[in-house]
Image (tube, rainbow, N blue to C red; front, side, top):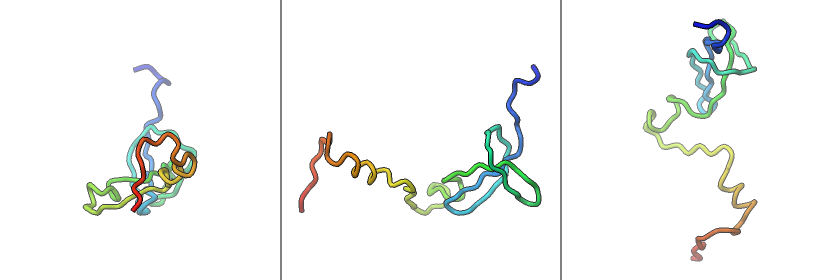
Length: 89
């Protein structure tokens, strides 16, 4: 193999922010943050969904909409360009 062309493959801590779950795996992902886990310093990657919080694995339906994307879109654009009508009740 050629030297100095491969990314750094190392242990990394992934932190699931939705349920405060951390786990170590090996990855080449680049990150600037670090954290201490089990007495050692590791690079840190923050994620919103992992197997610990995903509905498929937990059996619990949970809606994760941290950004409120639909509401932001509606506030920004309103009904402009909408092909559907809102039912008045």
